Length: 149
Image (cartoon, rainbow, N blue to C red):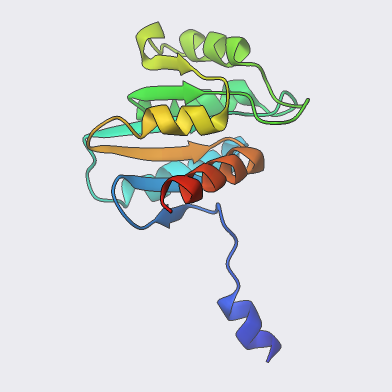
């Protein structure tokens, strides 16, 4: 009985590919190791015209290394603070992205993860990857659920 329960248990946000179009991936990746795994999993997916990031991260995480690993893997970055005082502000995230070679025109600062997702979802033929913290995934999952009702 316990074994059956464990086999049926899922944890949202561990490279969770949501059904439907656009392709949406929720991943709580927030450190270099988990981002490396996320990127490896992305390579296994079918081609997408664009990969779009919905991203936020906590101030106490290694944001520079996380962004360095995946900066060139995304065509656009929709960045926002999460609903916590630990969240890194969008100006700091944008600065790191620019330092890693991302053009300012590829960075869209948003007021919330919900707005970031809504803006990202307007891009045609894009794969949307929401990552950077558990709170990013939580907020993205919530808005996606509301929009799909």
